[in-house]
Image (cartoon, rainbow, N blue to C red; front, top):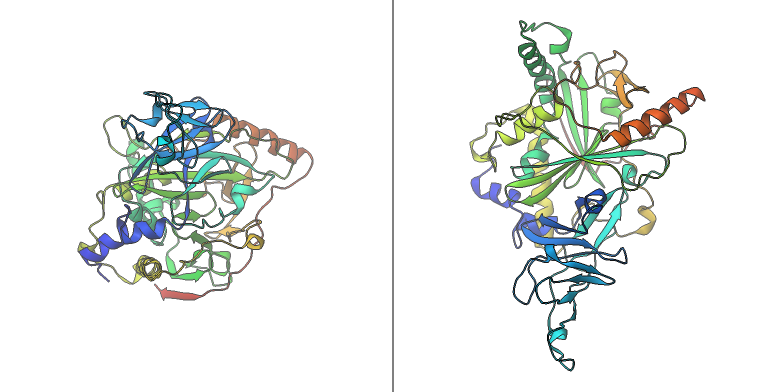
Length: 453
């Protein structure tokens, strides 16, 4: 299924008034890490093609308003936090979190001019070390309480970067099941061999991943569940029976949450969010540690000797917006085709005035939203490395491509790494195993599967 240029535009562009942009405005989006406001109370935010300023006032109240002051268009990024609101540095106009103008110091005391002034403003909330915003129509839905953001016994860490590509090609990678065996197996082993100055052994275990013999994708209430059967496996394995989900519309959940926030048509804020449960009480992380994710070498080349870097290479080298009308898709691309169909369906719901999938309004369903995750992944039982604070399979590799993470690799903030190491040592001394999410099976709404034997 080749996508037309016209449909490609409809599915990928996210600015105000665009079909996909209107869909995206029905959901809450992370716009910053709480840690990013620790040293400065204002932060520029660009999301869904809009330029805004996030601030925290002296009463610890968050606000998200359009960047230019309504008076002389000076940037509110340089504004002064007050007891209630943010004051423009140019003439002192004061705005609250709803965009209302509260004061205009240079105007006569009897003037009602301020009552006629209002900046665009959006609601924001904090959850799990991230600050979230809702840019859509009222009434705003509930901020979904997905498990890793709200577990009370987890050590958390956040890494993120801005990628110079459209959000959609990043999301489509989550539905490209067979790239795992090739890019994260064969190609990864090749890159590491070249870096080591040795011959590439195509038959080495690190270069070979089990072939996918069956892949499936099920729509359920929170997104699309991914299933796979690999050579030597069966549908009784966790990879098929349990699977893991892509939370609609922009988050992959296995086991690290990867959140793809559309900045504009050609830039995406990519977040890697990790929550590990050591099995013992966890002290508060205030704020949750945050790090920038490096992915380029000094010469501009992409670092491709680790899984995330390999994925980034695939995202970025497709161009700012992938030319999907030039693709040639086969049976193994059924997940990508399926996701595009689901996305188009949800856009059309919004165009008809209907509510799209996975918009949460019932508090009873939002206490904690557990997401399915395999306990036995790619045929290997995951074990916890208590010294390194990470999950590894039973063969002792890094759980992703059968090779050690080398020059590249997703950074872990040292505070989180040290805390997790200490708590896992404590748990081990007490004979306590780390906590895993309960395995459960979803109720599919619609599904697609294909045999690749």
